[in-house]
Length: 103
Image (cartoon, rainbow, N blue to C red):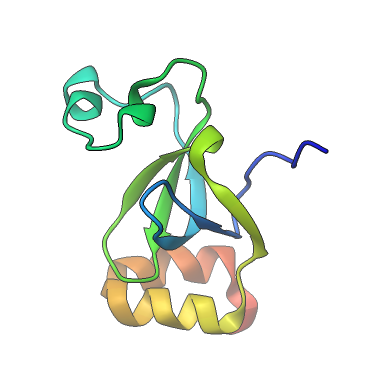
């Protein structure tokens, strides 16, 4: 059975084993130079669209193709708390819009 596509509020595991919260669909694909620098060659495969902006629970940001993400379900309050703690004010602002019930 094919899984549904990603959407904002989803908790995923990316191609590198990092958990993160999906927050925005990207328009198009990342720049070819960025793709060339990725250590996982699968990131350069065609047909991985759409691409998503993701807040890793460990902090920072990520660009993840739908085709290489493992869907875990909707992020919980604990997931949001971890992403905010690691990501600081920027992550908090993004997640406050997605999860107003947790703020």
